[in-house]
Length: 290
Image 1 (cartoon, rainbow, N blue to C red):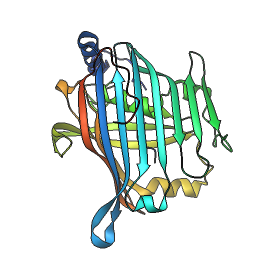
Image 2: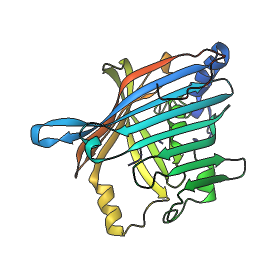
Image 3: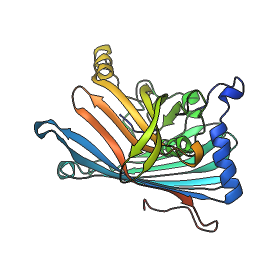
Image 4: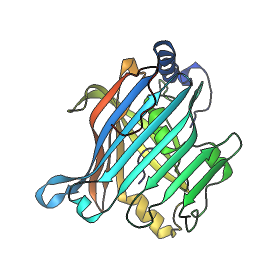
């Protein structure tokens, strides 16, 4: 299941993206902000009743009044790293508009020891184009349509857009839906507010939101039989996401994403470090995951 990865229909003041206007207004008044998050992925080890580290990941974003830049890195770690050669570097740039973040250029390099595929997605005013080296064998069944690509954002932009609360409402402070496109796969993450509570970890202690997540494959995926689709759908019993609740609800970075699979048990990714702070106005956007 892709991790993270967009607009609610207007219908009155109750559904206006008030959270985003507050976040962007603060940036416009006080200058650029810097987001740094480090994550650790984990898999269950039911035999001894514990879990093992499976991956390390980081996200660094520089968000200014009119533009943004995001860089992320992920790699296999722990015992999983003994068997899987996985190293992913991705970046996204775009502009900050009245309705949230708008991607312009997405760059993904997956060095897995096999194809080492490099994918570039450019978002234009009238089209979204993908360049993959080496090329994909196919673009999925069915491939993402023009309309599906135009309504989407890349997964990195989706993370930071969610952090800024671009689609949060009083009824659903979790925001969403996230409409993501990674150059081939087009999927939705639909969030539903569950509760507010106090989250405690080494990375963050404070108010947080719990959100149920529905993952919906739309286009660009493998051709599956009806039986396989049913099996995949019933395998995941639940998925939820925890968002930090910073700056009076203006800023909500993901702290934890966790799913319960019938086949694999509880799998997830959790923040081990979180920082949201002013960035030097003259400083360039981040170039690494640190």
